[in-house]
Length: 235
View 1 (spheres, rainbow, N blue to C red):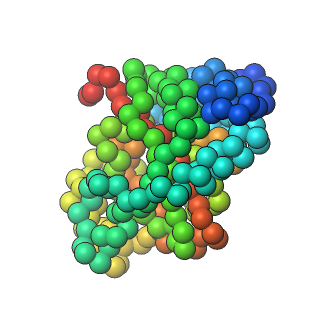
View 2: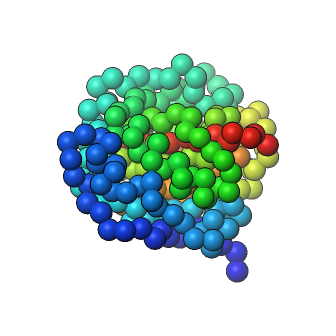
View 3: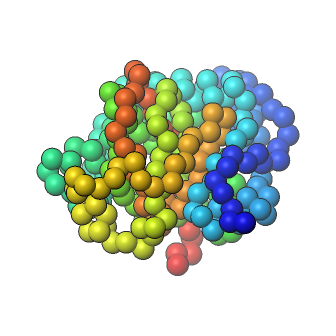
C-alpha cells in the first residue's frame, strides 16, 4: 500500500512551553528532540509531503499566534515572490505580505534536526517567514525557491484552507505552471488536499512539488509560518 499523508505523531517527551523569551519557550518544548520514524520518513520521500501532529503544547500554539500577530505590524510584500510567470491580472497574488518574529526564528533553528531526519540530507535553515492573509487565502501554483529543499508549514494564526499539492506536475517547468495558473479552465480544486495540523506542521518538498491554494474566505487575519531549509550538498 502506498504511503499517505495522514497525520503522524513523532516520539517526544511531554513538555510545556513556559518562559518569557522565545528561546526559553522553544527549549521548554524540546523541539530539537523531535524525531520521526522510518515509516514516516519513507512516506514523506515517496509522496513529497507529510503531516506531523502533536509536536507541541497548546501554550506553544498560543505563543506562536502572539508572535505572528506582533509581526504583522511590519509585514510587507517580499521583493522576490514565487517565480511562476503569470498575467498582470494575477500578479498581485504573488506578493503575499511577510514578516518574521523572534519565536519563529528560534523554532526555525530548533526544527533543523527534524528536517534532516525527514529528508535524510544535511540541511541548514535558509529563511523563515509568516505569510499573512486577510479577506481571502489564495496563493498561485508555484514551486518554492531554490533555498527550499524542505518547507515546514505551521498554521500560526487564524485559519486558512488546506494546501493543494500536485505530484502529477512534478518536473513541470515554471512556464508550464504559469500557463495552468492563467488558464480559466484549470480546475483550481484539483490536486491532493494537504491540511495543516492543529498542533504541529506539514512538511513538503518545497522546490520539487508544485502547490497552490484556491481562493477561500478568511475570517480576520491569518498567518502561515513557512520554515525553509536548504541542502549543504545540492543535488
